[in-house]
Image (cartoon, rainbow, N blue to C red; front, top):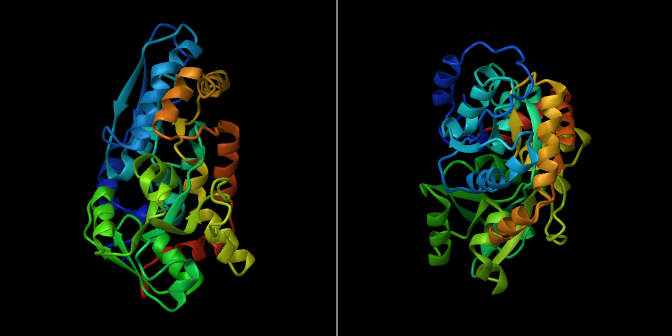
Length: 344
């Protein structure tokens, strides 16, 4: 039985169970995309976060690339850490292409490593596009005793946390054998960062490289933080000297397990639709997103929030989901063990 601060992936499962129990029976595929009908693009967060900003950038420009140039409406559906929206898309949303959504990346592996009885299958949703993969980093303040990752073998690294970053912290501990402790109680990232500046803690994990560049460029410019390790589907081109967490896997099974846990970074900020969309509707959406990420106005808005567009296609995302969910039982069990609380 997991402790009360289980993995980032496992957050708010009790609320999710209620939402999922209310989900309607999955609908059959509907007629092709209806011309002139408004289109809704949901995001599984409240307004203001990175996922919401990305969704709204796409919404503002994608109509011109859809048949009939329909009205495209941004909608928020927060709940259960993104599970509510995944359940809605899988069980309730119409299958005519008029409703799609951006589901938080952590949800991508929840049915595999948290709860196999969830009422949706992530690999069966229609994966459309992501503007970029995501890379998270663990960082330490420049005045902290830990300067590089090797230091945690002899010096304890004290991190600010809310409970949501525990998957990364636990996998870091178990793969490196290092000394890491998280101080829980900071509800949002901004408060964690204030605590870091005040010297209450040494640093934090599970902050995206994109958010760090966008919100704290002076930290990087003035070398106020040391980047210890990166969590990414692959090494970020801007972080060639920061070790990748998968570098610490000692066996093929550990490597496969780490790759399971890194799927969220591999899907980034994923746009997806209900399962069973007609191929022409699926391809219409995928083509529209290919074009919108190349749109000069989209690029200009993405630059303002320091989002480096490096799109991954829906076809590739679907392949990554299928490959992850086809992982060996041993690797899946090891992935669960990596993010489990010690003794649980």
